[in-house]
Image (cartoon, rainbow, N blue to C red; front, side, top):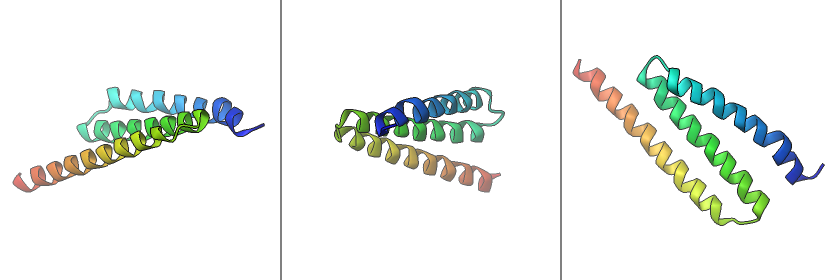
Length: 91
């Protein structure tokens, strides 16, 4: 089994199931914190899928897109954490 077959038949199905489970948590999440964490995890899984596509097509330009997406997700999570901390201090 070579790398492309392993990525296609093992890793992508696992990531697909993970997307379904996290999407369920995103829509069902009882609090806004659960939804933000689920959104961050969805973006992380998306970065994994972009990376696999980049490996399979031998185009490294998609890795740049994945890094930009990771940076945006990180900054969004930090900004939301900062907002929650400020909200807690004002109460």
